[in-house]
Amino acid sequence: MKTFFLSYFVIFVALVAVPLIADDKDETPPDVESLMTPEDFVLSGLDKLNQVERAHLSEWLEKYRDGAVKVVQVQKPRSQMTEEERQAEKDLAIAAKVIPSFRGWRGKTIFRLDNGTVWQQRMPGTMYYTGTSSDVVITKNIMGRFVLQHVESERQVLVKRVE
Image 1 (cartoon, one colour):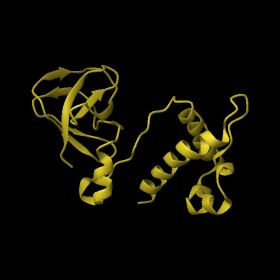
Image 2: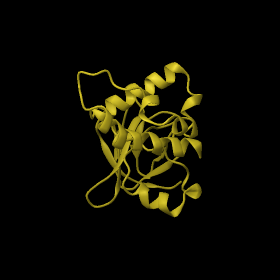
Image 3: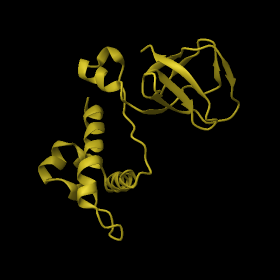
Image 4: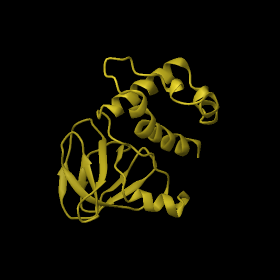
């Protein structure tokens, strides 16, 4: 649950606080600790991060502010989601890795992702892949259906969430 809260908190900070504070491009980006009150910093659990982890988070926030990072939502199994989380899932872009490794799809392929979600191919078709990248992004298309795109090959297939 802490990971879930932290994910939403980081996105909130990136969307609201960072653009307000870091307007000047020539300035060094503020570190994450300076973006909030000491109490908020502790309550969010960020005080448990070491200096390297905080620096990485600050860099990530700056990249996100500049548009170089896509929004990634950490998912949990559907059975553990609240009704609000299920509704919010409809608008997500999910970036993850297929595990154990991506080899393409054929028929009704099951895709197990490193974020714990499981998806199944919805449309007929075959795609074979012999490379090493397992990175995928799941988004919704204009018809409201989930689409899994293999990042390296840029090939897409309709999917549905099964877990």
